[in-house]
Amino acid sequence: MDTWWCKRFWCSNSDHLPSVSLKNLMITFLEGKVVALTKNTLVLLTKGGVGYGIQIPKTHREKYPIDLEVKIFTHLKVSEKSMELFGFSSQEEKDFFSLLLGVKSVGPKSAMHILGLGPIQETKDAIARKDAKHLSTVQGLGKKTAERLVVELHTKIESLTSKEPLTEKEASVFYETIDALVALGYSKQESNTCVKSIFSPKETTPSLLKKALKLMQ
Image (cartoon, rainbow, N blue to C red; front, side, top):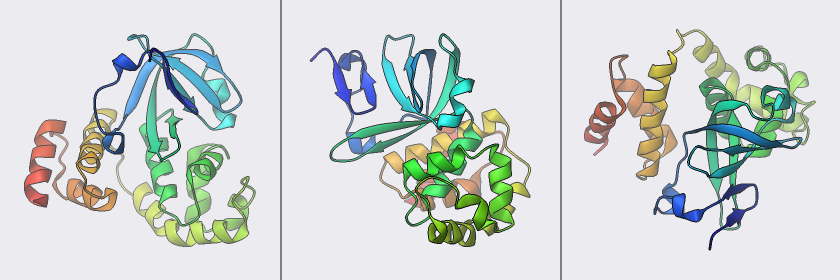
């Protein structure tokens, strides 16, 4: 088949896709040109001629004008009925999205709505000070889920904001290694814990992955 379509994630030519199990498929980031835009989805055309439908927070539309050449960090959700690709303007946004998904009753769409509240640091600050009222305004979230979110995440947010942030290169190595471990069957939590324990700024993804696998076997 020349055209492959699956809900909001599509490729103009399926031959461009690597032959891998969908369960282990990961797309860390994509680079290309924005060729179409709706209220919460953009279409990114890569240099290889593949078009990807990527969901974004609707308040972020102004970041992606048509014809913009851009790098978008991504999270791929695969289920029995669909594949959905969620996009972020920075690794920090993607990491925050993953953190939100760890909270019970917070799915990808709710997490995207939370990212759309405003500047990410303002939202993190609201969680750190346990401001559930600020979060309860998010579409589809609700008061109880907002309260659960701040209870579960406020200490993690405080811990994250107290540390020196990674450079873009360091973050790329760190999270690509975690993604690789998850693709090999390890859980997100154990992968993160392992990589964090052995990471150093001079590491490359292959060397860090090799050390992590040796430690986890």
